[in-house]
Image 1 (tube, rainbow, N blue to C red):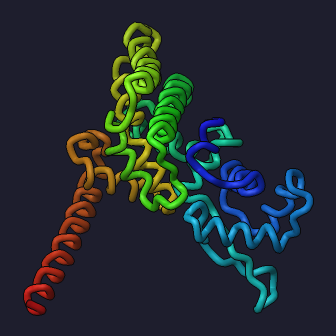
Image 2 (cartoon, rainbow, N blue to C red):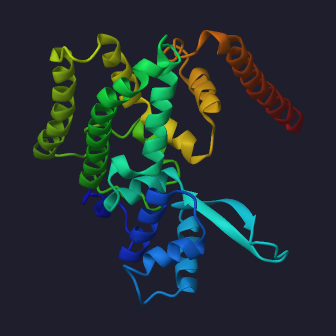
Length: 285
């Protein structure tokens, strides 16, 4: 997506570093350095390492773990991966369907939906082949609209810390000319056309329409959870807690009780933390 460079102010080598993480997932500096040497041969491994540290400070990558190198006690390798912000910026050189975060997202979607299917083995591949390309197209159009909308308003994401939250509120017409609004509406029209085509497509089960609409709406939150390293079960628990009405049917019956208890526990922990905070404020007053 060429529009990426209009909302992020990174240079060429940094975009290539993000591309590596997007395609390969968690990696250390040496692995990134070898890849980056094809595009920026003038950069040493140390310089690539410093760039990764800089990207970490800017919120594009994050350190996920530290691994020992062989049997050497004092030698360790820091392992890095993208953040949600880095995921978006990596789309300049990495197509959405090739991005590790998006691949994990689609695996999650199919896995969760198949919890409700009786013949999982028979359904899995057929369903994945039908809904994956459609969700990919819709999400890609949504991201382009997000980038275009913010570019027109003069908004960049270099210093923005919580981009997923901005997705929920950015789409308003304030400060946008009528001409630009018409162009932005064309992005939305393309998405509407895709949904209309779904309604007329007899080869796709009507239930899949609901799945496609649901997952084309909440991909932002799921990929954000993936970027924080959450497992499928924990992501589902988060979705049930934050969006109970939308995700009430996405629980396999035998897991219902276990997940419900976990949701209640999380809500109880949040409530207890709020109560403690309130009492502390009361005492200070």
